[in-house]
Amino acid sequence: MRATYEHPRAVDYRQPGGPWDTPSLDELLTRAGRLARGDVLVDDSAGVRMSWTELDDLVARVAGGLRGAGVRRGDVVAWQAPNWYEVVVLYRACWRLGAVAAPAHHQAGPAEVDRMLAQVDPKVMLSRDEVRGRQARFPALAEAVPQVGGPAGAVDGGAGDLADHGDVLAAGQRPDGGGGAGGGAAHVDPLPGAAGHVGVGGRGRGADHHQGRTGGGESEQDRDQ
Image (cartoon, rainbow, N blue to C red; front, side):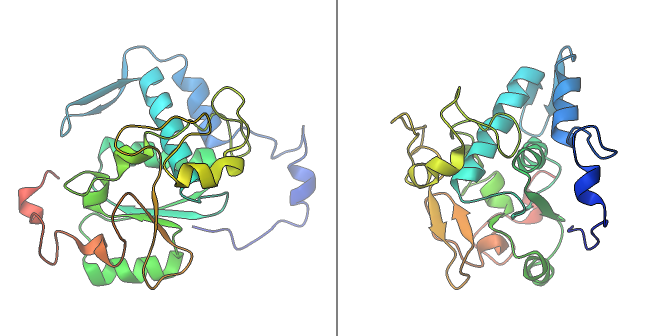
């Protein structure tokens, strides 16, 4: 969702000490998470159990991967997947970047998803199979340089804003010269016929958010809900 109304005193209210000088949702969750004990995220469908430290590290890396794929404050990141742990991470990663999270219901059909995407014009779109499945691209996002702090935060212990390294990350490399497993950070492919959109991973992007629905993949009944 995007705000359509700007309060006439919004600039004043956002000043330090102003009525709207409150932490972001990502910061509030981070503060609360530091006090957590034991597992804070459990996904039995993937056999995943994460402590706060593990979750926060994964959020930082996926945020870095999205940043490397060109996502900036105000850009839209869309996906279609059930309530998997990856979805929790994607939400948090978007908040950390100041990006707009725009999930499509996992049972929506191809025509419905097309209409949704036309409305939000996402910078990045991940289909169900790209979140988790045969074409999974989510793991590549998680190999990026961490985005610590908010949208203007530094990364990797002070390497500078990821905007300075977007071309490096897009090439599958880290600013320090290293690379992650499976080809490094976020490999960017243009969406054919849709300028300004990118896919994340090593394959071309098109209307392949229908994968598994229009043939060539598992049926909905064969997958975990």
